[in-house]
Image (cartoon, rainbow, N blue to C red; front, side, top):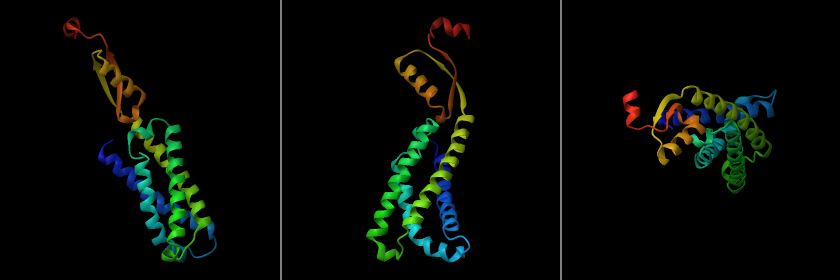
Length: 177
């Protein structure tokens, strides 16, 4: 995956993390002033967000493999959100005095909101990865070429689409072109 695609995913996650926090606080404290709640939650959750992004990186959510299919994408995100949520609970309770905040309900609600928005964001990116694939023609039939062709055919998120494969390409094939 190119650096630009990884950066877009990363910054998309950052935006969705903070937007999910704001939406969580709107849902949880409806009718009350959002600004004061957001200010109270901003610093502790910003620290937690670094942890979340690290967990997403460790779970390969910034690699092509997570975009193999929508099912793989969904299960990868669910796993990463679950691990991040559990680690967040540990951090909030171990360092509770530092944060002066124990957001049990908010953390659970935040995780659900984030999971929803991040999955739909990554699904849109998934569609872009597949639609912008470069068409390629493969020549040859060695074991490595067969493995590469199979991989590219099964993983269109890599940005390449095999449109033609001349498997038995020999001397006669060159003169025919």
